[in-house]
Length: 389
View 1: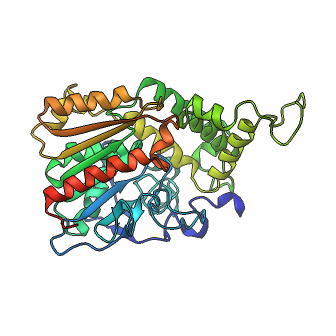
View 2: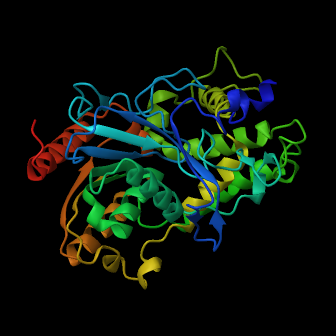
View 3: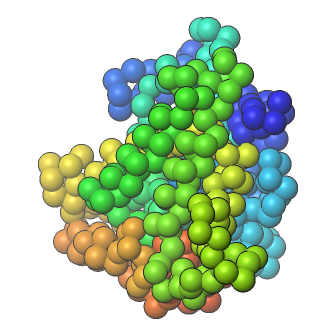
């Protein structure tokens, strides 16, 4: 039925429209929650060719509501990959030159084990029976995927927002396996304000009567209204006030005058409602709970005695951090604190703050200064790595 499209339709949760790597009981995933996840699987996409030295691999980490379809048509939405503007033949991340890997994170809903996946112990979707997943858990699973390809050292790990958190975790947990790291529009921990916005979204989902304590698939339902409201609230944080005003102002939606009711009088109302409605067609509500919780729990300094520099002690990884002036979800101060910690650790680090009014979502858009920064960093790192142009 239409209500079950996201995650379960066409069996994307268990048998995704992308390659999948399955791990049996002999290779469990150790979780921060103190338990083992077994069996489990990782859905992924690759682009380009791994060279004989296995030295040209780039791992792209997706954001909260992203997926593995970074540079190909999404099988659920039919839309282009979320970073096709950046990745592909002849593009800044040139797949004629690099081998690009992007996996759906553990806890996601497009083929990696998540709450919409079938629990082998019950034959039903995991729902809330899935243990809580952390950013470090996601990275551990990605590390097992990289091992599968026989890659000892990734040329680069990059991503924005929650993807940037994964980049930082990779550089901290596996410094010897990351030649260069490019965290974009991210932070070393989630702020209380960010946690607050996520909690509003989770409460919207759980307050929907169709949520059924997370067992909505078993009841033939989905908490579409709650998830749509969660998406609407979150989407506001991805934009800036200037961008909202520039795009919508107080313009009316398909009418000449106010209706003096609660229909979508304003364009911004109509836009947010559309964002909510389209989101529920491609994303699982329980995955939204798990993904937001993983970001809330992320605190790299706390994992290293409260001193962020210790997370990168002795690192040889080359770093480039990027922030945006209008990003109030992960403001520039967040990136600067990481840069200061990397300086204290003696790391090689560069930093770019990009002037834009497009807010947090700027990392997903056609932003020339961002592309120039990525192009310059990738090019310099490739020369240092001995990768021919």
